Image (cartoon, rainbow, N blue to C red; front, side, top):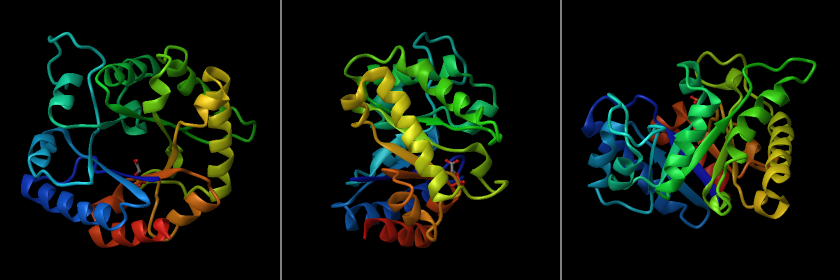
Length: 251
Ligand code: PGA
């Protein structure tokens, strides 16, 4: 199965629009259910509304979770609340959250809170820039290792890693990553995971690619880039584009 994960970020503004987008995305999930696992990671406020639509096979995902379960944290969302709202996946460590000050230790705790509730973390890693000396590899390795050293023994079965080079994300991206850059990093990430939890377990962790994925380049990240799925921002908000994207990777 190929994972197709939409990261809606802070859109759409209205609940009714969220319902429409969710239902349209579910049509894709239905049409390609033999090849794709379609997940929509939506703003926290829309979670309950969307669960109540009772549509399938689309899976509901969140974009943030508190790193703690003690109640006195104004503004945060408890992992148990996500579970209760029907969430089965949650993005952690996204570069936009890291840019707001979330560091490796906090992100590790967020991932652990999700695992405790049997919610699969979509654990994002990625370098801010590519330096010719290759230090960017250590940046990604450190991001991964902070979690891997404390990962409970069986938790690799419900872990997804997303490689998202920061320089290739969003409308201010420097450029798109090439499928070869994606493939090299996926091999590197798999090796780091294998060194920590063993080759067999590491082979079961899906590694996705994200950053300016479009209906035009999506297939190349899967075929040449060897990603086992995609984390898609902007293109996931336009059902027509997203439909073409889904079709291109499910061939
Ligand atoms: P983008 O966002 O597809 O709009 O570049 C991807 C992401 O931030 O996950």
